[in-house]
Length: 118
Length: 113
Image (cartoon, rainbow over all chains, first blue to last red):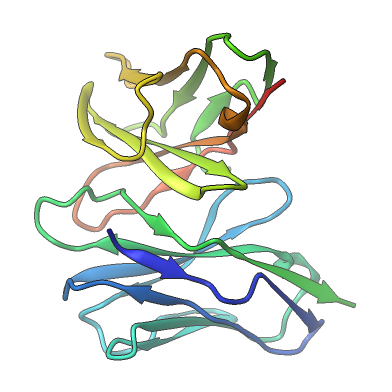
């Protein structure tokens, strides 16, 4: 099975600063998708950003961007201009892109708790 | 609001008991997924249903079962509960296309005492 590793259980950042959350994954597949989900205290799982492995260009969504290094199997999330509302648990997730695979089966890392200081 | 509704939000029960968790997917979504989030195991996939049929199984215990009804809502049944079953149970839904996007409910927090 694919494994996803988040080596930073906790991170903190000052409001308006930039923070990078790390994620590495292990797979033998060439076609896959990577995600970052945010889980605030409300417990809702919210999709932050998504990256298709076949795309070389790093995905961006407003203040959120990723650094996708396919050869290194690394997928980090950069949050720019951090806001108090960004405080949450962030999960990195992997999904196979192989034909016949379960489309909604995600493999999650253990999460990184992000604290944002005013 | 994701459009996925899970009830109840909280559930407290005793060991050995049986509970049913309910999920209503977003309107139009045919696929329902169940995930378990626990301190020990993290977030893990349990099972998927598509248009009433079981499609994939993950790390789901034999004491657990699920079904999806003709109106597409789904239920996760947990029986002979143990302390270790205490977790947050998520339901997610999708339209099940190649450009898959999962929409998660807010979960049911199960506490087994």
